[in-house]
Image (cartoon, rainbow, N blue to C red):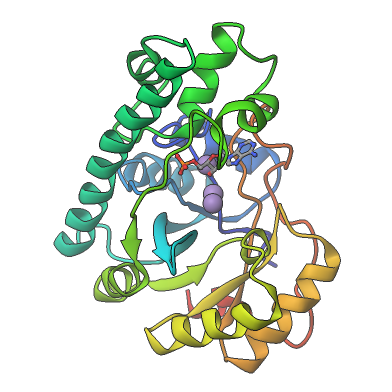
Length: 275
Ligand code: AMP
Ligand code: MN
Ligand code: MN
Ligand code: MN
C-alpha cells in the first residue's frame, strides 16, 4: 500500500528543509510515495530523487507553477514529467525572473511604509533562485515587525497591504502545455483556497480540462472534509484524477505535517494509478 504525498516544498522555493532532508523526513513519517513540488523551480528534484532511491521511497518529479487565471492567482502542480524538458525549464525560468521584478516592487511598497532594504533582506532568506513572499515574511519577522509568519502575512503580505503587488504569472494554457509537453500531468493545487463560488468553479475546471488538465488535489493540507467531497464531485464530473498533498513547507512555516490527511472518497480515481 502506498502512503502518498504529492505536494511538498524544500528550500529550493519557500520550504525550510533541503530536498534530501525532506525525503529523510518522509521516511520518518512512513510516506513511501512523494513528489517534491517547489514553486516554479525543479532544481531540487535530482537531490530528492537520489535520496528517495537510497531510502526505498517512490519519487515523483513535481513542480507548483504560479498561474494567473481571470486576474486570480492559482497554483498548478505538474507531476511525473521529464525534468530535462527544455520548454518546461525555460518557462519556469521566465516565472522566476518575473518573481525578481515583483520582489523589487514589494520592497518598494515596504519602503513606502518605512521598512528599508527589504529586497536584500528577503534575498538573504532565499537559498536558491526563487524569491517569494515567504522570504519577505522571514525578513520582517527577523526585524521585529511581526512575531510570526502568519501575522506578518496578515499585516504586510496579503492583498491591499504594503508588501503585496498584483502580478501576472503564466497563463493556464502555458502552464498546462509546458507540463503536458514534458509528459507530465497538470493538477489544480488546493482548489479550496480560490474561493470562486459555485458559478466560477465549474468554468474553471471545465477550461482546465479542455486545456489538457489531468487532476484535482482533492485532499490538501488546507482543505476541510466538506471541501474534499465538494472537489471530489468535480473530479468525478470532469474525469480529472484525484491527487493528495499536504503542502508541507517545514515545521514552523506550515501547520500541516507531511503525509496524507484522509483517504480519497470512493467516487474518485487516484492519480498515482498512472505512475
Ligand atoms: P508567493 O508565491 O511568493 O506569492 O508566495 C506564496 C506562498 O506564501 C504560499 O505558497 C505559502 O507558502 C505562503 N503563504 C501564502 N499565504 C500565506 C499566509 N496567509 N500565511 C502564511 N503563509 C502564506
Ligand atoms: Mn509556498
Ligand atoms: Mn500553493
Ligand atoms: Mn505548495
